[in-house]
Image (cartoon, rainbow, N blue to C red):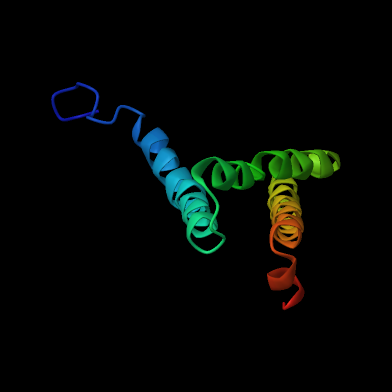
Length: 108
């Protein structure tokens, strides 16, 4: 409440705005950079790069499924979800790399 008795300018929305900005900073920006890297370094077209970047969706679904037994411990559940999603996405991208450019994948 402001000094005049009226709700403040955010009126409970600041947390929502901060949450949205955090998601953009932590998720959307790195995914956009990943998309740009697929376009630049891998030579993929827009649709191919978008499809490869979209593999993050099933990776998160795998993470959520693996973390279900930890529902009683939310921090553990989210940690397992994130770790599993990162691992699944990484494996999927490496498999795609091996299929698209076997000579580059084998040099790692």
